[in-house]
Image (tube, rainbow, N blue to C red):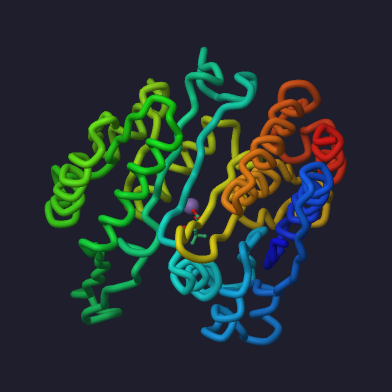
Length: 350
Ligand code: IPM
Ligand code: MN
């Protein structure tokens, strides 16, 4: 029995979560697993009404679940930074989900903006450190509001934090067993403290994985390779900020935000799965948003819960749909509504 905490959140979050749960229900029938869901209303909406964000009590409560399924949080009426830090980052940090796992996989070349790239050319995974770096929120203003103002934002990297992320990436590359190549994506030529540490730890840990080929690419060059030669990559490990940036580009080359899912992983604790696209206010309530990213997040969640067969079946159902049924992956252009796309995936799972 899986206990799943569901956070539909804001905007199109609830719509796509509905479709993900539809598919989860069908997967449960087919693969014979049982689960129960409990809904939590953490969101920008609730913050506007009550002033409440996620607190330590909420974090303790969530630790009782096997997984968390999140739609999207963020409301255009709330000043940037409040919901992000008070809800999303609070969950990631509070539950020590120190890995953000973002697969970049092209399911149909028709949806790739790059010329002549085929599904086998775009199939890699970004392992993004998810608990430190620039996201730590460390820094200060000096002489705020004056002509001499200085704003300092610190990238905080601990040996332990870097090492656990890099170890996870090596293990993941081995388990994935595709090209067995791990690329460190950094900026050793300029950010000479943080990336010196990352590079040293990467080289040390690599000695324990002689079966894994290693490689290094600067982050700026990485964005170039994503467009020019995405087939070079198998698994990429990087810090929080670079991982945030390159995975949006990754999402675009795999077909857009409508299909990109991610997992916030605590290998020893509770992990959280989400479409990476955000709350898309302009599509809210119209039944036009693409729920496939949220459905792919269900696939990742099942894999993480220890049912890789069910996870793979969900992914295969999505692949079938993307190749045979849909006109586009973009909101409003799929040829079907949000709920119809959910139905079609569930149907293919039968
Ligand atoms: C993401 C998002 C978040 C991040 C924001 C909403 C805080 O962009 O999941 O990539 O920067 O991590
Ligand atoms: Mn992002």
